[in-house]
Length: 478
Ligand code: NDP
Image (cartoon, rainbow, N blue to C red; front, top):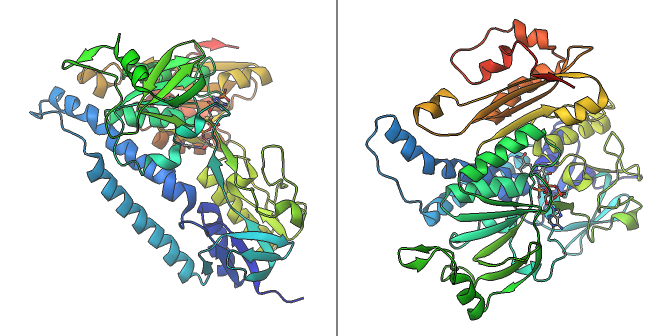
C-alpha cells in the first residue's frame, strides 16, 4: 500500500517539530499539521515568554541592590505595554524560525487542525484527507480549570501574556510549577499577589527542605501565601462586595489598597475554604494541565486513552495501534519540553533509523523559576529514605552578593547520598541561577557520581555552588 507521507505529525510544538525535522533528514516524506502557532506551548505560551517575564520581574530588586553596591539609581517603573510589545515581537521571530526550520528540512506544513480517521489517515479541517505510513500525535496539553462555581471567570497561564494591562492584585490558585512561578513573576512586576494552595506546602513532590525555603522566600518577598486553602465559590463582584472589601482594607495614599483596579475586569468576589471573602482584580488558575486528546479521533482509530485523557504509549512511544505513536504532554508522562524533544528523537531513531530506542525518563533535572529559584535532580530526601539508608549533606547560608546588599535571601545546597553505594541520589539547590547549576550537577548525578567524586572535585571559589563539593560531614542520616 502506498501512502501520501511516510510520517504525518499532528502538532507543531517542541516534540512534533523536532521529530518531523529529524525524520525528514532521514529521507522520509513528512507532513505536519498545527492548528494554532508553530512552536506550541513552550515557545508561544509557556517556557519562553515565562522566562522573559522572569527576567523582567527580577529588575524590581536590582535597583535596591545597585544602590547597595554604590550606584546612584532610583527605583524604576515597569511598563507592561512596552515589555509586552517586545515580548510578542520576540515570539513572532521565534515562530518564524520554527517555520523556516521545518521548511528547510522539507517538511510540508498544514496550518490546520487535524484528527485521526483511521490508523493511516488524518482528516484536516478543510475536509482534505491525507494518508501516512506512520502518524505521530504531539498535540500537547492545556490548562484545566477546577470544578468551582464561577471558575470560568478566572484566567490561566494561556491568558497571562495577552493581558491588556497588569492587574493591581491577583489571586493565583495552585501550588505547582506554574502557580509558584507566576506568583513570583507578578509579584516582581509590582502586582499584589495572593496564592492559595490546597495542600500543606507548595511544590508537592519536591524535597521538603527545598520547598520550604522557596515558600519562605516567596513570603518574604511579599507574596501572601495561604496554605490549606482553596476557593469555594466565585462570581463577579458587586458594588456591595467592593464596599465590603474596602472596609477593613489598609489605606494607601488615602485610598483602599486592595480595591479592584478600574478597567481591569470588574473584580471577582471569592469565598475561600477558611470562610474569608475577598475581591480580586483577577484570579488565575494554575491547577494542572490535561492532555489534548479531545475530539482527536484517537479512540475511533483504536488508540487507548487513559484516565486523565492521555494517549497511552509504551516505552517506544508507540500506541496500541502499531502505526500511531504519541510523544510529549499528550502522553502525560513528564510534562517538560526537553523530555518531549527526547521522545521525538527516540521515536525517529526507533522508526526511521531501525534502532529501537526506549525513552530514558530517569534522573531528569529540572528547575522551577520561582524567586528564589529551585533546581533539582534525583530523589528528594523523603523519597530516598523510603528506599534505602541515606546520608544528608546540607548547608543553608546567605550568599555574599545578598549579604553585601543586606538582602535576606538564603541559599540551600543539599545532597542525598546512598549510605551503601555512596552514589548521590539527589541534588537540590535553592539559589539564584539554580537552574543553571542543576544542569551541570545533573550530569554528575546521571553518571552515577558518588559523594567522594564530588569531594575530589576542586571548588570554584568564590561561588555558591562550591558548597556542593565542600560539605564534609553529613547533617543527618536517615
Ligand atoms: P502541577 O501539576 O505542577 O500543579 C498543579 C497544582 O494545582 C498543584 O499544586 C495541585 O495541588 C493544584 N490543584 C490541582 N487541582 C486543583 C483543584 N481542583 N483545586 C485547587 N488546586 C488544585 O501543574 P502546573 O499547571 O503548575 O504545571 C503543569 C506542568 O507543566 C508541570 O507538572 C511541569 O511538568 C510543567 N511545567 C514546568 C515548568 C518548568 O520546568 N520550570 C514550568 C511550568 C510548567 P496538589 O499538589 O494538591 O495536587
